[in-house]
Image (cartoon, rainbow, N blue to C red; front, side, top):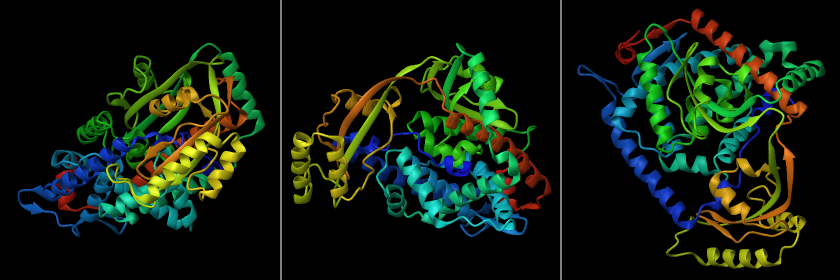
Length: 462
């Protein structure tokens, strides 16, 4: 499998949304509406660069090798962040974000120019797969992200443009790596031997967001932005979505996930922090070479030893034809609940669950793949723990439908034993990240970037 395809694999359970209760779904929808209202009111006044200059949406912010970057581009990216995280975008936050958004968009222009110069074409199917991956990682039903953007008046093009750059850039790196894009059996064996020698030492399952610093002598703007992001994460913004939006590390396509990392492969500045962090906490800004990192630790284990429960599950999903109003369910929704109740009492095998899901249109995949019980989201783990092996859950009602979950088997495994495929992924990700940083620095050095006065006001250190 090509390494750039492997990076799209989801590591989180696509059943997460099914466990939401009706009330929580309604509250979430209201939260997004409130966030959108605050966002619209915040962005308009925040477009003032200074007392003498007002930025209009079509005003040019910068010219990157002859290609323009406008204020509209900056505002669209900010709106995308607000909608995708479900958090309000206040005037203060927008002011603190704008300089980082400008720098990020400049880098994306440079990357896209490199992609085009190599005649790399990103297919629509690749972008569709990436959008689906974002939805899966965050427990969203199919097309939920598209529909949310449309409801909040944000063009899908804003998201597509960002994903096109990320996907195309991976193909650029693949070309640059050439023969180094293949991991040999010998290299996998050498890493396996190294892991065996480290048996008994700790490993960390972690995610990160990397924010580069343009000028190391003046990093006040980037630090302010990083603090803003940390506040949003601690207020509930989903880490995978924020990472996909802002992280300049190649793990962004995986929602910031770096997987299991041993101490020798973690930056010393980061390691000293994560050793002391509680699980699932959000770190303070960590200064590393080239920028700042935000990290979270999902789990810890000892190399060579970690027993866990491997779950083989199936699901069937009864979709609603319209969003659920708990106070006034439609006839179709009532009928779906009756069918789900009947199925929960009559289904006796995983094959029957697959057949049922197929008859319902396979709106969600029947087989989510093997899952590790200890790594499930707390809400989902609470549901799964109550389902006996070989039995079906009670109907799990969400705003867009009803899910049934069946546990086919539970197996105790030593999860610390990495497969050759996992080791190959880790080796390739390390090479890709190094190649990306080197090429980005080269593109910046050779670029002609003309900042207009409005941008210089915001980028005060320029």
